[in-house]
Length: 275
Image (cartoon, rainbow, N blue to C red):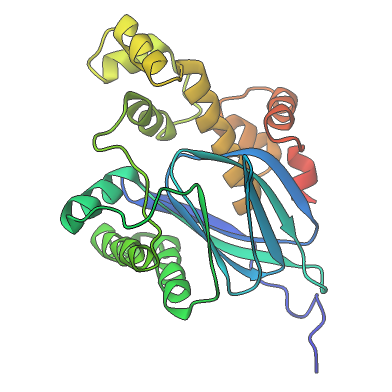
C-alpha cells in the first residue's frame, strides 16, 4: 500500500562540515524552489533521491532525477531549480570537498585530466558513486564519533569515484588569496570582519591583500558577502534555526536587512524557502 506523505515524513534536513575536508547537506522540500546565483567555491556532488534538479551555468544546463547525480566544479555560480515529484517531495544529498583535499588527491594521482574541464557533469544512476556520496555524507553528519581521518578517507574515495567517471575537479595548484580569505571568514561569518583584520591574520598588508584580490577578479566585500550568503542558504535549507538566528549567524543584526540582501542575491526570500 502506498504510504501517505504524512506517514513517510523523514527527519528534517541537516548540514554539517569539517574544516579543511568538506561539507554536506541533506535536503528535503515540499515545493518547487528556484534559486539564482548559487556559488560553488568547492567541487560538489549532488545525489537526487526524489524529484528533479536542474542546474544552469551560462549556456550549460544539466538535470538529474532519482538516483542520478550532478557534479559541479569549483568556482562555479549556478542557477538552481528543485522540482518535487508527483507526491510533492524533492530530496537530495549534497557533498562538497575542500580545496586542500582536492589538491592532495591531484598530487597523488600524478596524471592529467583525460577530458576538457566542464562546469557541470551529469552522471546517470550509478550505484558505486551514489553509495560513496551517501557514505561520505553519513560520516560528516555522524558528529564527533566519526574522526577527521575517517572523513578524509571517505572523501578521497569520492574523488577516486569521480576520477573514474572523468569528473576532474578544477582547482588551483596552490591556494589563491580569495580561497584563503574565504576559509578564514567561513570559520566565523558573524564576526565584524575588516580587510585590515583579515590581512593581519594572513600576514599581509591591507594594500597587498586588496591588490591580490583584484588580480583574482575579486574583492574583500565580495568574498565576505559570498561567505555570509552561502552560510545563510545552507542554514535555511539544512537547519531548524529561526530566521532571526540565521541572520545573526551571518553577521546581520537586522533580520529584515538579511532577508533583503538574501532576496537580492538569490532571487527568493528566506521565508519562502522555509515554507
